[in-house]
Image (cartoon, rainbow, N blue to C red; front, side, top):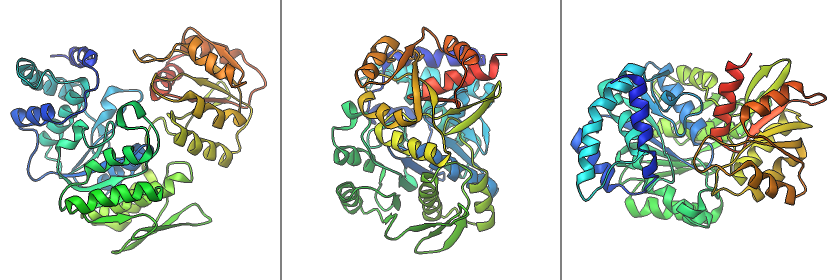
Length: 422
């Protein structure tokens, strides 16, 4: 099987949708022997910040010389971003080899009461098989959606992290932050410690109840774990076991909070073996599509995958911190999100929203999304393609720069075009 054949096969599973539930994934993992008993998973959930937190954990593990893997959801530019060993993406040939191995096992489930595996379940299995073959000691594993019924929850973690709780995917996870917290707290496992970031009191009670129910020791940012931001931008993190000064490379004040969660998760996992290397790991962590700056034709582009109300607030804080205003925002959004609660937060920084289609079956049409923005008094312009929007940007004048947000899929497509177009 070639790399392209592997990608085509994985994409062919997309029509099966996203089916929450663990029975099928557990059977898939059992038949394929995907879960070595000695592998140590650090499981990371959260409405926002889970990718950044996973990236910091991954970087700290790699900098210490530990044999480690990581899993990110979603990818931004390259499908191989999802599955990594150390700081390297899975190779095209290894992805093809693993897909060829897993395909008949996954298809065998189609003839049973479990049904055929979904695209995300198959991608999760690719990661599990990759890390098994690589004999990774640690794996930083980002949840796909929710937690309790997510395919990644077939693992037994050595520690778990719940970074944040907010409203997103409400049609699947619940209409209140408490209901969403219940789903994300499902990654807490009996006897396995966890860390939860700063959350609302009602949300914290839900997570504490789950931890108590399963006997999972729980650290809480603001209680057992504290962090103090220094004038220099560094952050001092204090846990019941240690104190460390970190300098997160990722931009934004929220990353100091995420760094505290990441460090606590590492410590609970027994993965802080060289504090100096851990510090270096935090100061060199990278992740695409999170307030990422790209320069094109003397114009700055800021690409950020924010797509829900809480992430809009975080993005707004970063734009204030970066002193940005009078931007043109290229945007698209998937159905099921809340544009009415997302875009007004960004409007103070944006003079015009350029609405583009997103390369995803669930994309809102530019006309439909623009109509919602127009109804809120926001100035819009629609495009039939992202390439047309970039061409228009090349001709635009008197702008302070460009912002791309509203969907990771839009960010990924525009990033690929910015890198490929002359």
